[in-house]
Image (cartoon, rainbow, N blue to C red; front, top):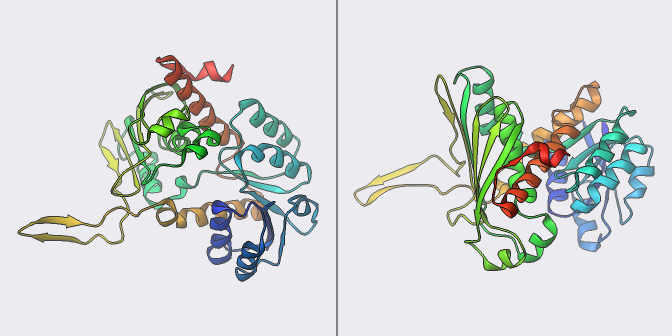
Length: 337
């Protein structure tokens, strides 16, 4: 049994707590740490079967019984806590992004070089049943060589302008998942990024220095062209789709819904709207990624998403931001320098 400590008891920390307690084999949460731990959160943690809570995450790092830590705290803490955890000999699961600064991610990479620590980055969508099916079809050669990859990702509601100011913006808090998905489906990295963007959903997002609507085109190393379209608000729900078109055919997914029932009457044909948000849409994928992390620890195998997989989407996001600022295609190599 792998004993785990969770750092951060916000929304994503609670998601991982629920998945480990209910859906993940061979793992047990010993302690949850959060600087804002209060009576309500403490009570909730104990109701989930967690033995200890604390306001100081260093208690988790100092606990010899804890084998692994989940870093679910604010983004600005991810890289420094990662390094502390690695030095403490704890296996690390770090929510995306590791950092907004490439140099700080490389510091985490350096800390891992002479370490036996397992390190996994939380890009849960790779473990979604729909996207796994698309990847499997591509890997099996069923659609031939990929020519065009399309990823649609649209949130049901925009975030607050206050969140946008600290999140790194759309490309580093939202599109980062889609950058990872494009790499996953293409099986290679991007070489160039170009963005057309606008503020069409909420003027306050533009006032905060960000955009809320974007179409991103990417040139991939294998010659394929990828297209991502993002919106901060889809009135009908959480829109999450992918398609790979290739030399022999195409594979595509539709949105998950509460049911596949379609009602046909004289007035028209109607079906269910997409599941409303990521907690409904992706809960199973959070459990799958955590099972893979625990398996890697128990069996001494590589994690499915290492620190390099955490670095590449951030570089793509920074290239996208530069493309918006300079109104031109940006080579990935420009950011790596």
